[in-house]
Length: 161
Image 1 (tube, rainbow, N blue to C red):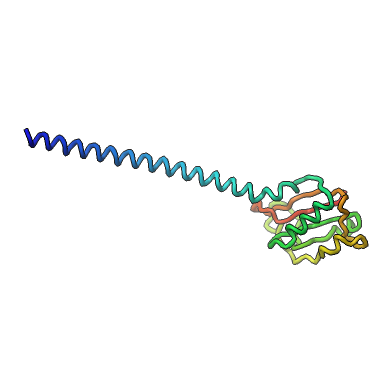
Image 2 (image 1 turned 120 degrees about the vertical axis):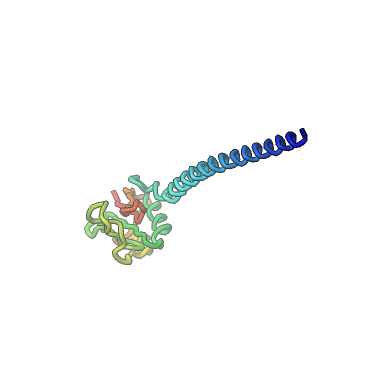
């Protein structure tokens, strides 16, 4: 009888151990799925936040002072260009600051939105009223963003209205 009791205790212990291991495995698998979902959501949020600084310029009308603020903020950024077309330099298709981007051709082409050269725009000229690059602080500008084929924002375009 003592052997039967010991055997039942061992069997119960083994059964409980197997049940505990099964529960831990199930919890681990569901936690792994939750972690993957959380990582995907975090990546989406991170992408939205990285693009948020550009959304204010997506098809909006802004003032000239906001244009000069954007120039200060983005013109030194690598692989990025800002084009400003004022009433005075419309004939020459405006001036690029930072880098000159390829804005011709199809949006889906590999070259669209790519840097073609270092831009020669001078920020000081945007403040000089005698310059063709002068940005009137109270002027109205139509803003647009330039994205490359991989949907990365590569530039901003401001056109005076």
